[in-house]
Length: 83
Image 1 (cartoon, rainbow, N blue to C red):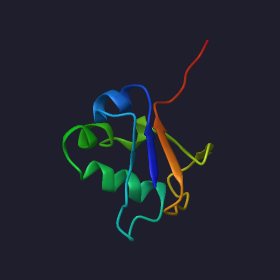
Image 2: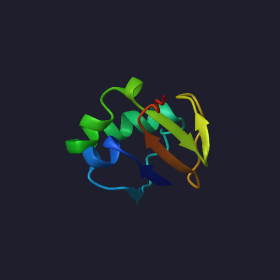
Image 3: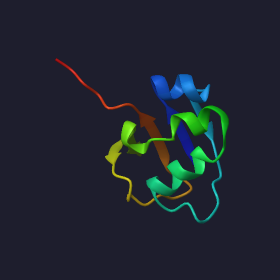
């Protein structure tokens, strides 16, 4: 699974992207967020409050219950505001 991090998520985690192989129990976006938070360090801080994150799976916005597969590209970013 390829993970992409943008804006403050990237800065907090300390990288812009990585390839991961989460355990088989990680089957939704919410599970992935919980697993990433357990990695400690910057991950714990970036993924501590899922309400502060937005996610896209394979370039489409995804909700926490969106299913995942090992071949997915998952991007995390802050909510977008404009004006």
